[in-house]
Image (cartoon, rainbow, N blue to C red; front, side, top):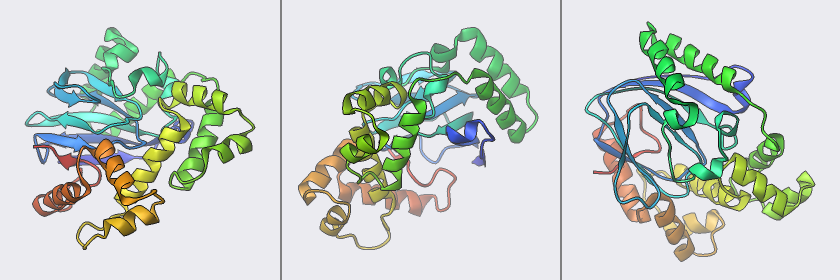
Length: 279
């Protein structure tokens, strides 16, 4: 697969990690994405893809793309035989300035880009993107569209500072300490987080702690799950396993098996990292 990524320029650099272009045959027909503090915007330029999110029994089709705020459960992404899209990896607080609704309304309920920006707007954007000559030009056009759509959000800076403090500790900092440092009540902080991030500060901290723990695993080596749980600050191994199932839909042992399968069958793949085979 062809994968091209670039960092955004100001003013988007405080909201977005990177913009990317993806084209080619996916490694598997379906990929499982564990819950992570990483909202996502995809503008689809090829055949429709499928998403099964939250507690949904069936996958839904997305033709023009999708918007995903911070998920609380694993979600499943179904690719066509060949895919072509452009997307944005967003910081937890970064999607709010582009949304016409509070982020909490999208939690574990992805919407199409049409639902976010309107049918005419996404049709015109997709036309401009598909007419571009190179991936870099496509990314530049998407970046320009995002800058044009920026709008002010109440409490965004407070949420950004608080989220950054949570991220810096891997989700282990007490939320009460952050509230005191920010000089904000827990009620106000939770309200702004739900509107901007989609989840409460406590839930975001859980997501960061889990992601930091799992992404640091060396799946090629033997793993002592008791030590992993203790080092991450979980109350006990049972608590860690429960969290693991909630965030990935898998047991820790099964996760390692699937992770090793991906590495074995597709070493160095562009999508290696967080997705897992779901078939």
